[in-house]
Image (cartoon, rainbow, N blue to C red; front, side, top):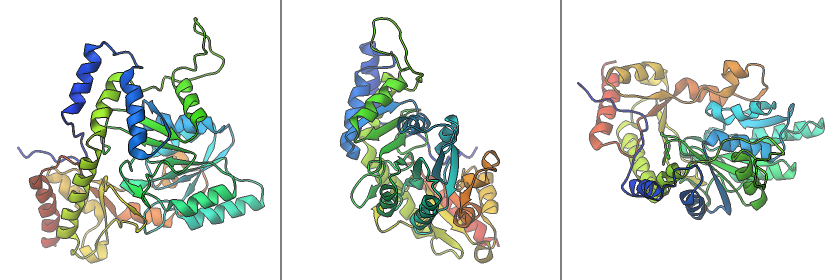
Length: 377
């Protein structure tokens, strides 16, 4: 039976297990323990953030980030549209409303010009958003300088969703560390994983301390259980933080492996008619978390979905690029600004198997399958 090639699977090393054994040997199985503190400190050193809070998921981190900046019912939040739903779901947890912003062509991320124009128009009518959530998509940073300039000009906090971009750079700095608050994900398909988990970072110590407080059920300092506000059960466990510490040590290796995968795909498939790969913007270095391409059916001969189904028959998992959030049924009543770029990328975009533990034989199978699809036309 042919072994299935999956899109992006966990890639464990040796050090992770040693840290987990340490947690067992010291009986630090309870949620909070020394691995959490060490993971937060080591993560800050890697990304260049001042403070960090290790949490149960990237979604939890986004939820806390919105609450920390005071988002309330009825507020509007500008948000990237080309992303996974977890970017926008926390907006609705607080009764706020997302307003979706289209992508640019050169990074696939939020278009800075559209953001500037939208904020300018909103300022004229006195209806500025409470925050901007910017996604760094598929391992590539958005163009941060003009986006930060727009947010600063209108005094709007910027939250960076860097769930897919740990290990990327923007002009030598780490995406997720330039806004008011940044969040990362350690879901099982990410560059590094803690099985499930996330991180909230900020240069504002008070915000991060409040995040930790809210993430541990908002328990007041008292010998008994006393609560003056509602909190959440969002803290990462000590055991999973141990996995994260081990994964963090091999981050650069994992990024290098995924970038190598991209280069192999690009060299083998880049000359096929109608195939274009996600560009790497000049302002930064992408991790190539997922290798993404677009298919022009008029030139290639068949569309993206035909390729995806043909790969599936060969036991090769591939996926369409994220369906824009402004097209999702759950957000049908929400406003969107632009949208044609994201819609086109979704219509023609395909993500190939990209895990750092893929073998050369695995990648060759994917390449040969796509070449064969074209040869049979």
